Image (cartoon, rainbow, N blue to C red):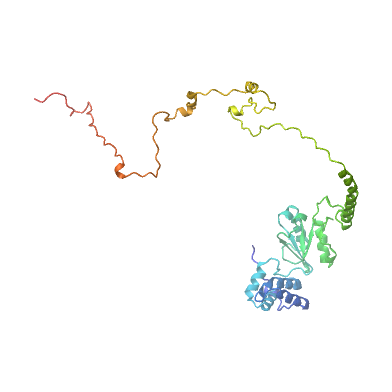
Length: 353
């Protein structure tokens, strides 16, 4: 964020005072805040001063600070922080704020700035020769759907072309800015599509007269249908037709190699037959084989796994055993290593003389 400073001392007026209308408005703004919080009214009071003088002067900041019983530095902090306050003199008839954020930039805001450079001044915050016009580039002004756009005072002018902005600048320079209609400048209504309305082309669908007419028509149709409903009620109702049987679904059956899920196993059968015929049409279960049941896959057989022999009875981890009941491991006697053949101290088997 750029540093915002007050205008040079040569441009500052000696004093400031609200006119009668703005003085009354300032009192109303101060009354909106609770006792002890009157200093919060500095933002709207600075805006009143800017609307009266065209820009915020140092004398206005000090006068408003005195009205709110706050130090001058606090008033300066507010005025220099918010970019809505103009701290230097601007055009007496119009100060044009050109939006330079992404949507407007993509729609040609650079061309609008070139128009301001050629018709007002090459640099921002500088007035033209007569002091009636000035311009600046600002951030988003909230009319992205109708980009590009500019703001003059409190009005926005949208859907601009360089030629249309040049015409608006000439009208303001001539003192005829009030004749320019704010909003879209290409005939668009608010934020409708550029090609025109696609829905709600007629107001008849949303008028109260249309809703009342539709309500009366619906009430009349209901009254006309009551005799027919009474006649239909006197006729005995016929029994509803029985629904067609629905075949059982196999969606919940898992697809595995088990016999129970074999598609050849037709059970339950849609047609009831004798048990013998059912067994003949079904797949027989494989014979039980203890050898096959104890045999695992080759990958499992390769793993050392106990299958036979006594099983060690597992004891719970919390089982308590007395110290004297614990079995001490047997001591192993270390055997003397045999001397190697190359050892010279190896006995030869001959008895000494």
